[in-house]
Image 1 (cartoon, rainbow over the protein chains, first blue to last red):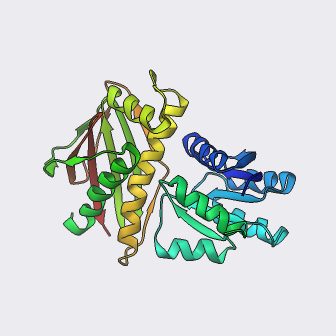
Image 2 (cartoon, chains in turn blue, orange):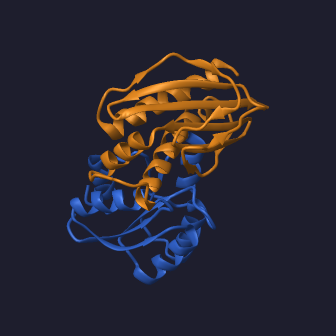
Length: 123
Length: 153
């Protein structure tokens, strides 16, 4: 699982930093960061990371809409939704949009490592 | 305000604080609050919409806010700068998000607004129109007071 490149999308500086620390500790390398869905689409197309960790509730464009747009442009994109809200209807909406997995905050490092294995196909 | 609406906010706040602070959190007695509320030094406010409308406030002293933000970032914090504020806002978002998830999985339809963090010693937050329940949560860094003001529609 070493050397995978990740993009973290979250409007919270704390959440971006926390996720970066976890992903770096499990062998990832930060490709970039974005603070809303619109930036996420631009950053994804420019950087082509191996995996994206995307918040849902963000200003300008929410995460689910950004996932749909990215998946329309690159059906092989591997996106994990991360949210403080984890109710079934929202999880279904996120997975239907094309996300590969859903994590509820606060995220645990072991849980993030398992999800990276899963979405990158080596777990 | 129905108790089945309120209990998820108390248990979720308690669980999230226990998770991010890695310690036991004791919940005090639930009390009805007189309005308007006097704001503590630091208050995170999260709005609720949907089939319940209102807001949840998480109040704490400046020292408690700095200690919690420092704990969550694994570094000491001496001022309420951008990272400390972002951390406390995220904490409020996680506590409220877990509560509304529990309620929504039972058939409710609630949405939360992004948190607003208010810092200042002379701030007063008025909740005149809503019945407010107050629950103190005792952390190893001091008290976090949860105010839940909600009406069902």
